[in-house]
Amino acid sequence: MSNLGTLYGLGVGPGDPELITVKAFRVIQESPVIAYPRKRKGSKSYAQRIVDVYIRPGEKDMLGLVFPMTKDQAILDREWNKAVELVYEKLQEGKDVAFVTEGDPLLYSTFIHMMKLMQELHPEIEIKTVPGISSFNGSASRLGIALADGDDHVAIIPATDDYAAMKKALEDHDAVVFIKVAKVMDLMIQILKELNLYDKASVVTKVTSDEEVIWTMDELEDAELEYLTLMVVRK
Image (cartoon, rainbow, N blue to C red; front, side, top):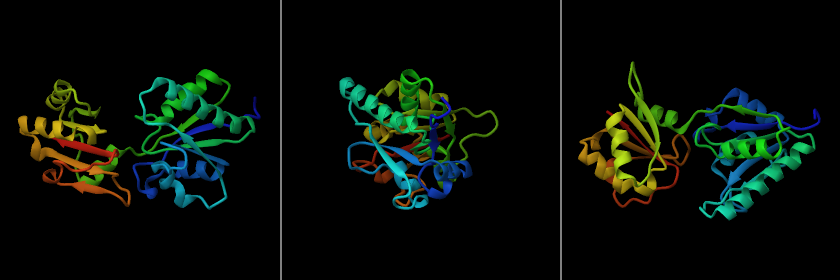
């Protein structure tokens, strides 16, 4: 099986192209195929935009993989299997494939699903990951917030409309990073006010990128927030 390519899960950081690691840069340069997730055919992914600066036009085989934003399991199964087989075709040709993903490939990443399904369907494929700087690291840096010191407890929580769970997360930790927070911002503001933590919260969209927005809390009510928005609450 030595003629098979290697699949790399490549963390390319939170948005600033300079925040990819030296190893990630090397793998990008050495891999003939760059795979990237996208929501629909023809669209450009956030991860692809991060690495574009390092890729000359026509230099790589750019493999866009559609991962639709839906809860329809039949559609998800169909598209995920299609994506894995497209990657496997390249690996069968002996080509290494670098699957680029924002942040870290093993933390709330699309690559986790790719890796599991590839292991299930094609266990002969060698899979390697290159860690990346996550959005919560980038946010702490840009906001000047120390997430943890000494024995502090920190949580990374996908924000949901579960009032009790979100409140408990804030009560139980010294710092909480809420990802995917845009869709429940009104609820989060309500809870922050109830716990007297409103002035301890910060919100940022597309952190470290050239599209970054650091919000003041007063701007958030009724604001149109993009998916890549997170909230940091530090007591």
